[in-house]
Image (cartoon, rainbow, N blue to C red):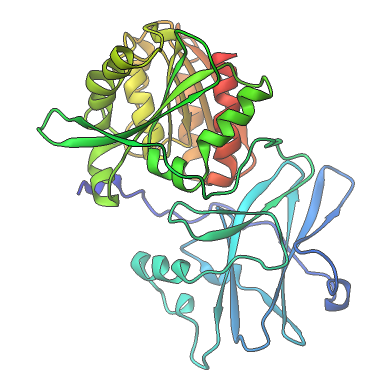
Length: 379
């Protein structure tokens, strides 16, 4: 396992915009979380948890909660078993969240300086919000709730998990092994655009991306296309395989795309061949575009792990490729790195669309941004 694939844990540079919650009486009998407009482009969002047996409740909101200061995300007891926490956020915010309860008399584990392993164990026991019907799952497949304010980018094609995977195919890898891929054809036609989806298992199992793409094609938001989902294996395999110029990058360029062009009715035009990826997968998408522009000529890279590496020089030399690059405004580690990459490519020959969305390192945001990026590149 490559230690360079562990992101540095730096504290949040400014406190999350927490404000005093309303009285308990004002939250009873209402849909949670409670969103109240301030009339200036911001809203007060009050999260509510009813747990009479809890001695402490932690609200974990994607990239508002600082993993180095978890006590700052503890909810306030409001009496009669109610726990409250309010933030003031811009009206275009979206995030996933969940609750962690502690019922024992001893201090909760997040006050005892729990490390990353302990934090993962805590999150494995986190619970979604029963008062909020808007939900999704995280990458591990656990249910999480979603809060979205009125001006958040629309996600008309978001789907619940549960769709069956397409048939699996195993393609040979350069090291003599095999890697799974899955194919999905959306719409009809010949010489279709090819979309290579990294971390294919996640998008198949947790976010029903084939159904999302089908709905977008049916609505005319995307043209008919052929998707190729590329497996990433275990967490340890993924850490060794993504985020650099080798690994999955070489598999896609040297094996997966040539196989698709030989066996599926897809384009041979790099300009209509798109790779998509998030986090370390987003960095792999950048490296693939930078090092193999003759194979893949467009990419959707979301919240790329630029703390690991940044192929700015290689992208500048790649020629007239096209890139949809996006990052969350709540991602305090990645946001300045993405701005540096954007600025480093400002006078390059590639076609860059750069987006900052109001959210975090979050599939609840990426699932909409992915289709937006594809629409931009294939429209």
